Length: 314
Image 1 (cartoon, rainbow, N blue to C red):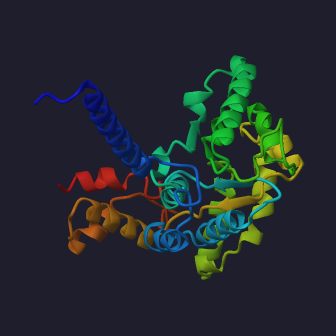
Image 2: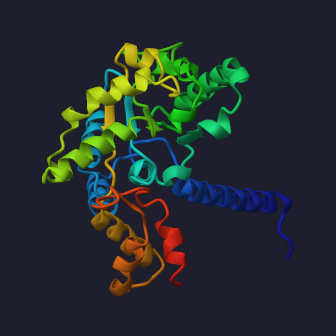
């Protein structure tokens, strides 16, 4: 017996509603939502990652963990969290940012709430600074409106055109709202090689005098880093109002790496490939270049080329 038209319509509607609800539940389960359940710092996870995967950076590990934890645990922070990470290539600045993103967002660096800008890629032309500034302000405003707990990472600050970064000053300032948008829960991270020479000089002097790197304190470097980047005409922070008005909360040094740290990087790389071979760890680490020429205390490239060196043994 054929189903009456009305019965057929009702059955169809019920089926459609069921499909919609199923899709909605699935979408809700898999989507990355901007709420405290989906965006919540895994403090223990970040602490463990810094301890077991970020080698030789006792200052950075402690400061970043405390700064982020403090900012996120404050219901109404006075301003957005702003950190500037300094040190030569291969010391872990980008990796530390990656670990932070992984422990804060469901999708890590690929999260729709995490935004990475590279100076030479996104802001290559000096004659277009005005346009870049306008686009940057719109991008940040739009994304913080979408999710107050957004994170913005600016890589290669040492290659950014001076003056460009001043465009975001209002978003870093001590104010509740800018054009009806609250930026106080956002996180801004700057990565720069500028100041690396000062960091390396201090670290080397400690080691040459028989002191351990762990005895280096943030207070011995932070102020000098601030002045160095501010007065460096090749830095994106040159004469910036962000430093003049004390809007960067933390200048964080990344120390040059010693042989033992490079060995740890080699082990980590081998582990990522499913290889356990302690007998070649020292051999691979020894193939890197170290300085000074006689003492060979510090790696010239940090752990930057470890993966390439490992390739030569497999």
